[in-house]
Length: 206
Length: 252
Image 1 (tube, rainbow over the protein chains, first blue to last red):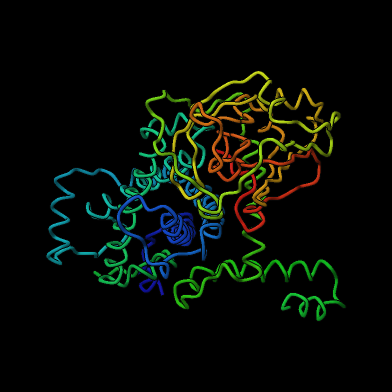
Image 2 (image 1 turned 180 degrees about the vertical axis):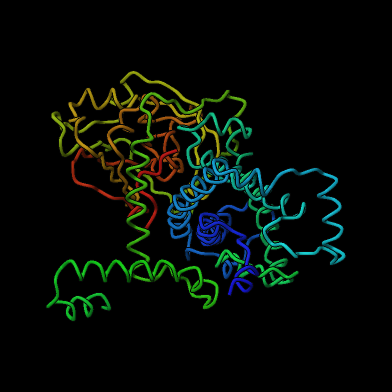
């Protein structure tokens, strides 16, 4: 019995798992409804296919966007508070050096990254997860600045005014979606990471 | 229809149990949304339960924006050089269908919780103290444009006619069958103007002759054009777009 138990290691704390899945659901709604809102007045010379969007029309999309906004902001505050106060961020995301990120990205591309211990993130993972957090913060701030360019005009001014805030909001979304696509691709390549994000445990491979 | 069947079948049970079951159904519906949208390609927005959830959140957002609204916070103003030319036309119909109001016969009607309901002619309105602003008009679609509007400060006008400013809403009906309503706090904001001029010219029909209520603290569709009458009320008046799902407060 003891030997069998010893093979399992705790990888993800409960708070991280719960906020991760709430966030995944929230981001899906925000991105899909945001694309519909984008289509009402496209910033660039393309539209997002309506089949990929949520809301049916502009008013529906706005309702989704401003409902899910509360979900991701409250969830994000819980996650960030936990990550900072518990030391989770310090332990899991740092130290982080550009050299290590570059090295691990090359290894990932060559398929040479080992994942013996899922509780330790490699440098490429650390960089990606930090980038997602930063993207989310920029998205929330630029989103607030677009929503309230009078009441929160100080934030709008930081992004260079109303019109440039729209561009920032779009670019942060694009970067976030790109990281999520890579993230999901990595999960497909290393499928045993998936149940770990639900149960929190992983079997030691050594 | 589904809801009615459930209520009938649960009729014999305690209200607490019914509530808890309803709550569970509601949660379940909420959680399956994302999966539904992706897998079926059908939009969960059409679902009855989802509809009431989204409308409830929109009412909540009305309240949140009411709390966030600072009556002393001014919308940024811009120099003449920043004005967008040409200023875009926007309505729920095309520019060829713009309503033409005859200024000679025009009278602004006042209704509801207002002491002096005498209608106002245009020369009377033009005779009131006028002020100008160059502000950014932000459309609910996302685009924005800067324009110059001139007219009477709306709070001054409301004081002059003896409007009950402790009431909740002011509603507007327009010559083009448009209608909308705003909260009293926004109506009394110093930059909320009842405007008769655009870019130093008499407001042309396409921008809302004979008058447009310019509210730089709200989205464009909350700025009614071709106003024929206004009323002060404590009953929620809704609006043309608001009744179709756009957020009522829609503050900037």
